[in-house]
Length: 130
Length: 401
Image (cartoon, each protein chain N blue to C red):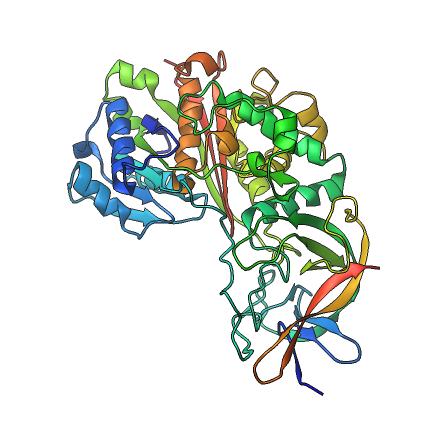
């Protein structure tokens, strides 16, 4: 079986794929990248937390015109996962205003990106209608 | 001596549009010379130059001096995304306010015609042959399109949609109607890049860029420059009555950045910093939204204009859609917004925008706006947002003379 790697380092693959964030132990603010101090309270202590895999679409755009190399159309969305906002591309849904709506329920899904010359497969996340 | 009393003595913008025969320095020099002449002063009177340019190579301030007058004064080259022009102006204002100089020049300039899609860097033709995590998120490839969008039309589409999710009342048609207003307004502005009235159908059937923003709902990439001369109240009193009469009082000058909010790492928050800037600006000026005779706000996309009605307190919280549908923001409405045509039609040469919008307000306050004059205008507000983010707000008042 070929080796898999996550497309970004805040995606954890395995039996129960999920996203992780660095949570400020002082105020609970969450960050998908590293911070020297918390942007909200300046605390310097963080712990890893798992992000829920279900959420609702709180904003979206159907992008039909993008930079060269970016496949269009696609649905860019901001998903509210129980209080933590996640940026994503929606998957397994037709990119049309009739099929995507504000407030729709979605869940995390895995999206294969490709395989490199060493046989390593990159796997991305998206959200799909729940 | 520190001065609490700041005035705009001279201000001008170039025609926005395509200027293939002029470079960045030519455009900046044209605006600067015109602003100096408008104020009845020369480079000899200037104690500071603040110059804004985002997409050029840097150091535009010194190049402008070489074009119009090298007097050895300090130059501050500023860069603050789409708030660059407002930041340059505020830099000159701060120098005058601090009492270091009694007059200063601010210039914003951009060559952007044909620039295409902003924000999206694109990805290499093929990703690396061996995956290797890179950058702050350890991504093994370009994220644009794979994890949401980097493009400005898409980001600001989401800003408008988020407002709709929170408060309701938004639709593709509503956003398109905002663009319809701004394109209609631009027909009266000879300096606008586009001056063609567009029907709602034309706007909605235009090329879709990022739903719900079609092409004519996006800011127009173009070339342009704008410049302003600021002066202390004490110095102004020594100038001619005509200069004093045409001078416009800077009632508030505010720059803010985005404070932390839960979702700001995944969707830039353009709301909180605008609300904060507006609150400070109204306090500084001693006026409220109801006192504004016109507003130029940052309609980089039709979806953005809507949220700023709310952020600037022009309507009740959550009431932006109803406020717009009441006709309030058309030029004959209660609070005319973007009578210049806005960024969607007048155009958006990035670093020039934050001074050009102030020129528009001053033009009306001086009663010199011709066919598009808002009659009896006494107080106006100019607002810009630079993504990342920075917000500049200036409140301006007609001279009492």
